[in-house]
Image (cartoon, rainbow, N blue to C red; front, side, top):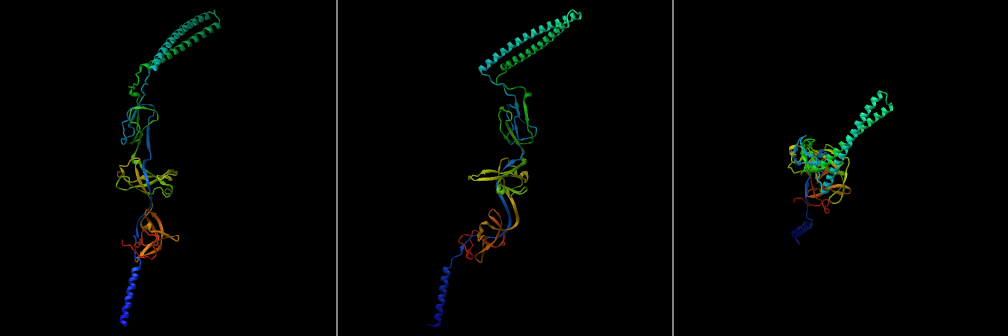
Length: 398
């Protein structure tokens, strides 16, 4: 065989071998990639909250009586001193046939007692006149030494006793007369009649300026002392209460910046943490899990015009900014995986995945801060899988 033919066969064999190697080599694995960036980063916790007022004023009925119609409605502005509602004396109660007949008999009995008292008064008056005259006669005789001092003292005592009896009889007459008037009032006052005397009507004024938040009573009717009628508040003092998980609440501090979102407006409102309550409470979530929640109160610092539509008891979402920086190296949290107790990422170098140890920092949503191990501009696999290996060929073009 000639040398040319041997060289040709060798070259053909090499070409076939190369083709076989190329055909059997694994194809690059398609992966999703993320370019490491240095952008603004914020560590935060967020949760639902509701608006509320730091101070509200409940206006109740100070006395029992008949409430006239309450004119102010929820949303109406009021000034301090404005009349909110009026209470008049309760109407006379209605009497059934039996009670009316008893009242009529009571009136007759009262009149009879009055007549008896007047007769007793006349007797007492006559006795008093007689005792007075007797005392004057005994005194004249005593001056002429015709009676003893004992007789004189007895006449004086009789006069004083008769005067006291006359006064007692007069008081009994007055009491009997009042009983008659009381019994007559039960019968003569029209049943259910309201008092026409406006001077006896009590006007209840607003304690502070604000708006009507709630109206518990609107229509006329009998009210008891202490019954709640209206609630007043000033919407300029609106704040937000967010019940955070206790593990999140311990990271929140007063004066931390808060972003208010999904409140119904198009802009994000700014707020500041005013107070973290010292006591938490237990709450059962929608999934039936018991949670420890802590109330955190947030003061709105955005201009009043920006949240003019907010009212008391509205739902909002609050984001508490625990830490933030304008330039932070960060990657998706899904790019991190554990190996031998350390955190790693797959960095794409020359179309191959290279495992590299990194030191993660804070987490914020779907992003994680990288303290060491990566530089901006490098490309990492965003979602590494179990079959990914160090040095394997990858295709991040898709």
